[in-house]
Length: 316
Image (cartoon, rainbow, N blue to C red; front, side, top):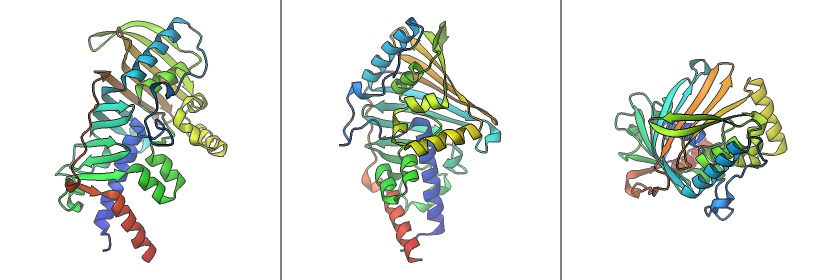
């Protein structure tokens, strides 16, 4: 059976949605060992060097350890990009995220890749398989044989493609950011050479201590665990491309509550087109990140369709 042009568009839109959310939440496989098992709590990215400032470093290190052990939290994140960047606008994500093992159940709003007429999309990930619930009013719904969910085995699709770059992207290897595992974000902040304590502040009525640091792109890349799969040539090319794009570094802010957990994290990335902001609020640390995947009879397998596309292309 030949794949219709409409289904090609459906698959393209679905993959774009995966890459978009993958860039924000870093749905990568770096938190697992070679056998696919979840890494032990102590195996997460650790701060690579001590930070001047004593009390700030100690507080953030304690928060890092507590957050790593919590393994899950509720998240509410907003990502905004300047309109002049070509894909400007605001995307919101709310739901539950787990980082040991890596799972999520979130609703995405405002993403341009969701398709005209749809305002939100629910996305579930478990065992590196992504499920996307297609809104009935989305144009993508017409190409799914009446199924409610699209399913994509991210690792299998990337490996089957034989494309190293696609594998990195579909595995969450986003060049612009590490990932939104809050423990690893704390580790990144601890890698800043100038992290400091700005004092007590309120975060939506909650007492918290505000910490801030900056990282150059090279420092972020060195501290970011997933980026270590890059070869030296790839790393050098990435740094050079970033410099040409005018991206100099990252401003990172974190607010830690009295229980020692980060309740808000903000990353600002300056570009010639304007500033890209990611602002995440976390709560309910340690709550069970129970993710129920959709039944098989309600899912449309995008990986199977990708393989069919490959056969169609080979026979053309």
